[in-house]
Image 1: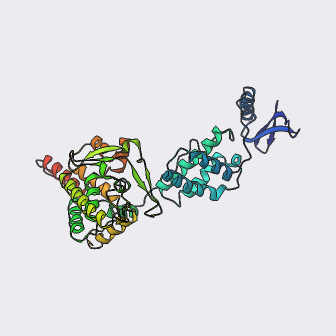
Image 2: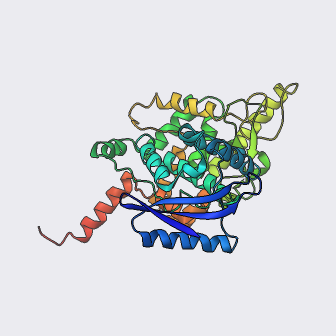
Length: 388
């Protein structure tokens, strides 16, 4: 039986759960903040109905730190090492605020207010990760019957509005190379690049594969007869220690794919194989031969930091390329050139290894300067008979 109480202009209810068999004390649940007695009665009736059906779960006194630890322990058994690392980093942001907070005290409004505040400090992409981790943690709490409700439900992150200055700045910092810029860069890599540079950068630009996928390639993945490359793994080495690496499955199931390659790139790879075989003979006493395509002199797969440094070394020699170019930029560049060549979105999706075509549309919904000029020229030609 419930009873009701009014304080100020708000109503509350209290429902008796009987006597605790361990403490011998009366157990009660009190909820407040209702605008009317009718609303309080309706909520109490719903609670009593759940209790009668055995569906009621009493919120735990567990704090957020304990919950996050239990969730991460469970999550780690089924996720990749790289995913666990990312989720740990994101959960630490939530722990800064709620380490010792009882999870039953983290209401929807509390969750909303904190994430809205975080949105002023972090990028939209990072906030998406934090919110995803928060949803997973509290969903785990509900499934474990430590909470009745998930405070993250029906919450959407505020969209961060870019200022005019930021938009203009971003336009100046396009993160891909135009065709002429790519030709100039690869020409420089051929003449002034260090070991592996020209072949690796050419492969990235002509394939659009991720840097982790390229560094995980082994020679059996290269089919010289069919002129294709099989992508089935990615290199994970966050500490950039050449010995401590892990080969993981790619980002998604769709990332496992076989792609056709340009004849010139396949010739480069053949030449690279011959050079590598010579290096194996020279270093045969300490060469760890695991069949990787791109290796250190000792046979270990290249750490990602090395080609990243070498990329910047070459870009410094091309001051006219005033862009924030990274190793991932070759993937954007490849896609831009596919669009310019008239390749359809579906084909681009398959080549890049995107499971969801929406990913392709969202990330690569841009046109190169050549395409913009071409579109303008075609429209002008269409309207040339109209005198303004």
